[in-house]
Structures are given as C-alpha cells and as structure tokens.
Length: 330
Image (cartoon, rainbow, N blue to C red; front, side, top):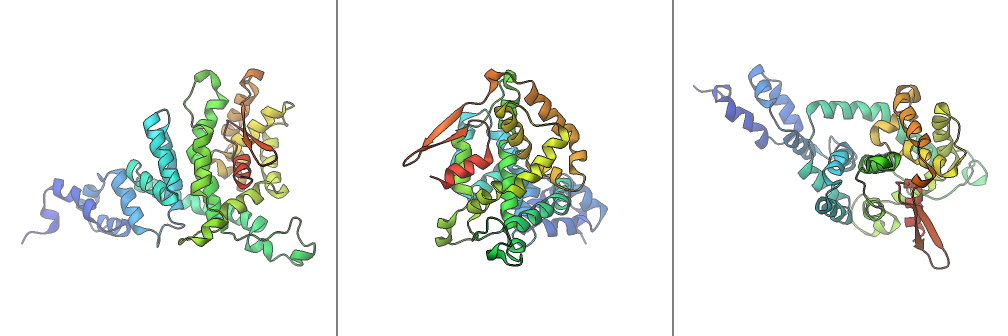
C-alpha cells in the first residue's frame, strides 16, 4: 500500500499549494521529517497566502496585521517605478482591503517572519496599543471625573487602539524609505510623493464617515489626529530624541529629526518599550547624524493645501501628524 510520504519529493513539495491554512501547514509539517523537509521549500508567497487564509481568527486585527508585516516589501516593489507606484496608489484608493490584496500578490513571509511578528506583538505592538489606550482609549475614559477635570483635553472618540497602532506602524513601513531620501539627499534615492502618502491616509485610515458603511470601521483618523497632538504622546517621543542628543537649533532640522524617528515602522516602535532607546541607539544615532549633516539647502520644501479661509502647509518629507491633520481639516 502506497503512503503519502512514498510520493516523489516534487509532489510532496507542491502540497502546500493545496493546504487550507497555516495551521494545517504547520501541523502537517510536524508529522514527520519527510514532510518537514518537503514543506521547507514552500515559497514565502505561499506561506503568506496560508497565513491570510487563517485570518481573521488567528491573525488579528485583520487585515492590518499582515499588511504591517508586508507593507515594506510592497513599498520596495513600487518605489522608483512609476507604473508600480500607480498600482500602489490605486490600491490605496481601493481602501485597506485592496491594499491587502496587493500585499498578498506581491509579498511573502517565511515561518521565521511569522514567529518574529508574533513575538513583536507582545514586545512592541501590544505595549504601543496600551499606551494609546491610556491616552485616548478605554483606559483613558476610566479616569475618575473624566469630564470634570480628571483629564486634560477630554473628548469623545470612537477608538480601537490596537488598530490605530497598526495604522501608525503601516505608515512607517510604507514610507520609511521615502524619509531616507530626505535624510540623504546626495544619494538621489527614490521616494513617494506627498499625494501618494495622502492617498494612504485618505482611503486606508477610516474616519467617522466610514461608520455608515459595512465593515469594522471607526474614526481611526480622528483618534490618530487627537493622539499625535497630545502632550503625553509628544512627551514619549521627546524622551527618546533627547536621550540621543539635544534639540536642534534649526527648527526645520528638529522637525525632520522628530518625524524621522517616528516613521521607522515596526522596528522603530521598539524605542517606546522598556529599554527601547538602548536597543535602538545605533539606528537613532545614525538618523541624528544624517540630520546634522544636512545643509540649509536640504530643507524639505512645503506644499500649500487651500482651505476655505486659509491654507495648510505640509512638508514634502513624510510628516504623519501634519498629513493626518491636513486630511482632518479638509
């Protein structure tokens, strides 16, 4: 009688293409050394698709978790290529589900990546979400005498701190490379323009209007806008930057330094954890050194966006807080 493991290795290696999800994949691979060896050749894209098939039960929040895991790959794929950039922009305009579909098509994950991401959930993502929750979420609302002076800047927000944390991380994963182009202007590195970044905020971070549409939407953009202007959020980042060096005298350099440390994606958010500054000191020192070396002529230009009775100014360099504000004030 012929058993499954008696089949040729080429056939066994193709089985992951027909397996239901990542749980079935890992369980099958663990049954014997032959399947373990055969399944080790599964492509990163195949593993990503299996992980996606496990969502939303095992990969929460969906689809933001897997977008955060793969956004940098999609960014690298599109960066410097006009056709691919336009494809990415169309994905933004289709909302978070369309962006997720593009990530599934163009990116991949290894099992090691998945393990690393699940570890990052506990070491980086959950602590970040907890900080957001304490500043603008359920824990914040539990403050005694909330509406009677218990907190400063009391407000009504429909929040999902976990998803908001991923929105911030995804922005960094998508646009950290664009920030690098402004930190090293002599290299003429490719970068996404402001309109591409605004499309991500406009279409992939839901606002109050999205409440009238089906889906797990709330005012994420309103929460993020409220969060990034709060003194407690800014105090967190000020403690990070000042451990590396004093504020720059030039306002534009200080602004660029401030924005650069906040747009490093998942790895960059480690700085907000216990001992995070020490763990990331090398990266932070490199960014600061790059800002220090910039000349006056390297200051990023600003774009004016008209309003009814005034106009807003936003940098051509990635500036998440101002871009969110500009969208809110549209």
